[in-house]
Amino acid sequence: MRPAVRSGLLAGFLFFLLAGRAFAQLDGRLYLDKDHYVVGEPVYLNFELTNKGSEPLQFASGNSYSFCGGYQIEVSNGPPLSNSSCLSGFAGSCIVVKWVIAPGEVRKEKVLVNYEHDLSKLGTYSINASQALSYGPATETWPDVANDKHFKVEAQFQIQVEIGSDETLVAMFQPFVAALTSKEEGRQREAARVIGSLAPSFLEETIISMVNSPITRPFALIGLRHLNTARSRETLAGIVQGTSGYSYEKEQAIKYLSEMGDKKYFPLLLDEAKNWLPNQARDYVLAAAELGGEDAMPYVVSLLGSSDPFSRGNAIMALPQTGSRHAVPLLIELLRDHDTDLEKLASTGLIQLTHHSLSENGRLYSDSLSGGYPDWMHWWLLHGGAAPIYGPSQCGEVEPLK
Image (tube, rainbow, N blue to C red):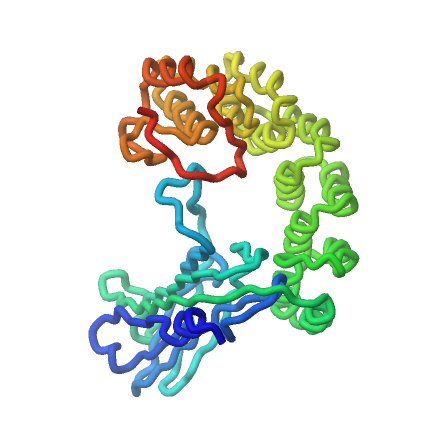
C-alpha cells in the first residue's frame, strides 16, 4: 500500500463537536470500505452512530442524499479553485423524519459518493466528509429548537483510483442488477442509484429498461446522461417528445440533452422553450441556449428585445449558456440598464463567459458587482478579439478584471 494513501485513510482525522452530556453518550465515525478502487467502482461513505448512554435519544433528519440529511462531502483530485466561475449551492425543501436510537444501539447507514461526485479519472482523490445531526430527548414534544443539541463528526480520506478490468466491474455490478427486481423498494432505489450514477457501458440495456419503473426512472435518466450514446440520447428525446405538458422526467431529460452536446436535438429543445409562457420557460430557454450555442443566439437575442420582463430575464441568463463571443458585448451593454437585478444578472454572465470579475480578489459574488460598464467596455476593447470565451461547463479560476 502506498504510504501517502495509507496515511490518508488510517490517519484520517476524526473529531466531534458535541453538546452537553452527549459527549459521553454518543459515539460516531465516518469511514470508507478501503483506500484503493478501480475506475467505475462504487465508493461508499459509511456512518456509524452508537448510543453509549442509558437513555434513548431522538434525532431528526431527512434523506441522506438531500441537504436535510446532514452530510457534506467534498471531493477533489487537484488544487481547489479559490474563486470558481461555476455557480454552486442548493435550495429547496425536504421531508424530515424523527427516529430514536436506544441505549446500546448502533445505527449504520451509507452514502454513495459517486452519486454527486465524479471519480471516473485515474489518480488520487481527497475526500472531506462530515455528518451533522440535531437531537434531543425521546419525547413527543421534541424537536424543540431552543433545547436542541448538535452532534457532528468529520473525517478526511485519500483514495487511489486505478485501472481495472471489465470482468472485475461486471462482477461488482451483478448484485446491484439483481436488486433491481427486489420486492423492497429501498433496495431497488439504491441499486438503481449505483447503476445510474456510474453507468457502465455493459449495462446500457439495463439502464434503458429502468426507465419503465417509477422507482428506478430518475436514476435511469442520470445513467442515460452519463452513457451519452446515440441510443441513450434517443431515449431521452423520446421522453421529451412523448410527454405533453410538464413532468419532472421531461424536465430532467431536457436538461441532460442540453449537456450531451448533440445538436441534432437543438430544434427539439428550441421548440420546447418556445412552447412555455415566459414566466415558466426559464429552464427550457437555458437548455436550448446551452445545446445550441451560437445557433441559439438569434432566439436569445429576440427574447432580449421583448417588452416582457420574464423574457428579458430569461435571455440575460441564457446568454452565458451559449458560450458565444457575441454574447459579451450584449451583456456589457446591459450594465447600463436601470434595473439593478438585470444588471447583476449581466455581471454574473460576464464572469461566466470570460472568467474575469470587477472584484479585486476575483470573487464571483460581490456587493459591487453591479455597474462597471466603463471598466468592462475598456477591457473588451483591449482584449475582446483574443480573450478566451468559456461555455457553461468550463469551470475555471476567476481573475480580477484590472
